[in-house]
Amino acid sequence: MKNTQKYYQKRWQQRFQNFERAFLLLEQAVIIPAPSVVERAGMIQFFEMAFELGWKVLKDYLEDGGYLVKSPREAIKLAFQQSIVSNGEQWLQALSDRNLTVHIYNETQAELIENHIRCDYYPLLSALKTTLAKELNE
Image (cartoon, rainbow, N blue to C red; front, top):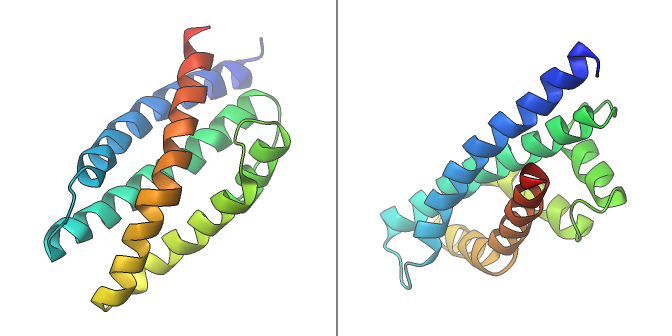
């Protein structure tokens, strides 16, 4: 195994541990049935962190496999092609919404993002966690 391959293997495993920690925070936020404005803002922040680490762990995992990945969109598309994630379009929508979260200024937009996080993005991140945990334990 080349030194760069060892680096990427170790890197994705380390990043996965950070992703798991961020995911657990998101998980705690998602179980709040009727969040306050502050709790909703926390959920959105935890989504941003978990998503950011999620696409980066995909990037590192793919680079461990010999691919060169330069952007979140590229990581998502390649992960879908390699069957690491199952819903590429939903992942791309999550990326788009993650990019919008820094511009949320009203409660209606925040509620819409909250709904997407609960119904769409949390399950995507959960599936990624399960898939990569299996890889890590093999």
